[in-house]
Image (cartoon, rainbow, N blue to C red):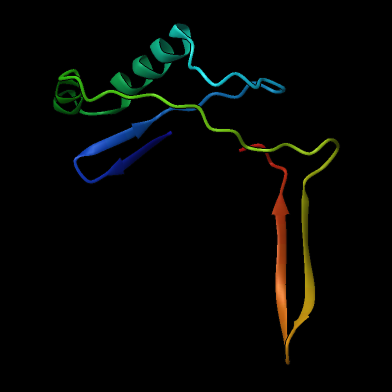
Length: 91
């Protein structure tokens, strides 16, 4: 994925089922950088080489079996509220 944020771009995207490591591997970084080089303008890539690169790992929960996607109605005080459960996609 590529997400513009002001004068920087957030690029990334890996998927490792069951992986709980908190560090990006050098191979993952190279793959993401190659992908970014193919889709971003050259001037953006050149600007990024000036020490502005950072990396982090985020986790997205996955449910065994299927995702949960359903509508509930709960009473909060004097008001019925709709709640949409939509999780477990893993991304």
